[in-house]
Length: 152
Image (tube, rainbow, N blue to C red):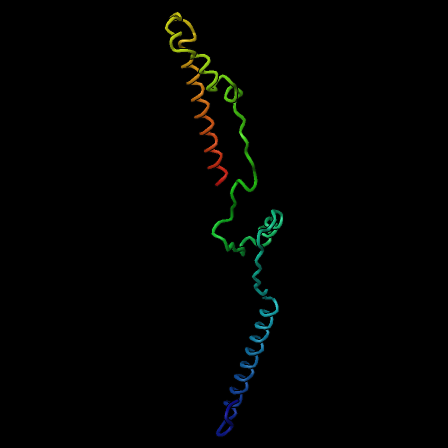
């Protein structure tokens, strides 16, 4: 490795030690690089489209720090998992809030003048109209809330 011209005994010993040190460092470096390449796990990128729940949990358990989700969200609408069908009080589907019942209660306007002021036929129509409006409002509110929930 070194030139041999004009070398004395001291320089030759120095050159031998330097060569041996160089070979030792080279050998150690090759061993370290070899072990690194053997023990290094190759990164693999696998895409699993629509994994099942148990697959997702298994991947999360095994590769929690290395998982990458290519989609913007890891969620789905509630409507894909559940269906909600509301049941309202039976009064909201009864004849008591139908137009035919209210016409029957209201009757002929001329006849209402002859009823006593305390007769329920004079004030009852307003109670049934209020009940009808409350039922419509509650059904509308519940249906909008369910639709909003299922879209989240």
